[in-house]
Length: 283
Image (tube, rainbow, N blue to C red; front, side, top):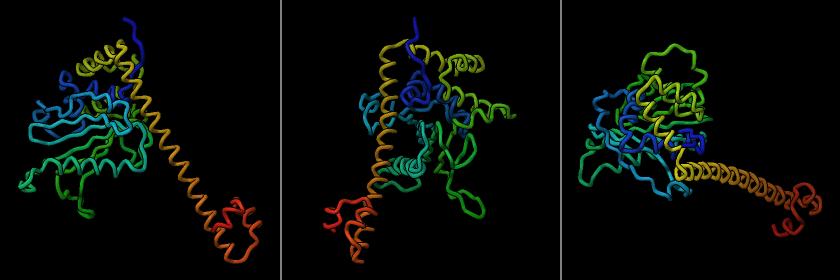
């Protein structure tokens, strides 16, 4: 059957369709094993917390397609794709971590019942906190570098650094993570096929992608999500431009008001600030 479109797992719908469904939990486990310092037996038997695809979350402004799961030891993990890094994202991921942490404490329970919570952020481009492919942030004492608690882990996986690391000697775990990130980043079928030859779990993920690429419904869902991402970038750009324009206008008003108080001729103020005579007279 003919393939209808090309897929990259940087599309969060496609990512969840591969990693966030019941039949592919073994793929998710394989991916997590090369990110987290957790014994494989603890990751095995993970429970997906949101296995449904809601149409609103595909096309709505507020829709977030992440992969949420719980491990045997009650650790909660949230995995999210972020195609473009922005200045708010660090605060945003802390906010989501805090929400995930506190919503699991029932009324009357002691704080020691709070679960460990981990967020994993896969970033497509623009990540600027450090130069690592994989970075992990915790709450630590500034001078001794001691962890205050092991309940908080925030991971960033930087897809933009993959090509730079291609020829670096790596241990088995780092090589496995590198291959998974390359698999996620690419839309090249040949690259995925090559990686799939080295890993049974990547081969299974690749089969899922190949089936998706032949489905008109999957094509519509994938492209709807892609359109949402493009629209979101446009909304932010428009908002940014409007903010600049509004700030410049406010500055012109303040300057005009100051000149007016000094008794400078209104025509000259209009020429200097770009404001109309009516706007200046109204100040």
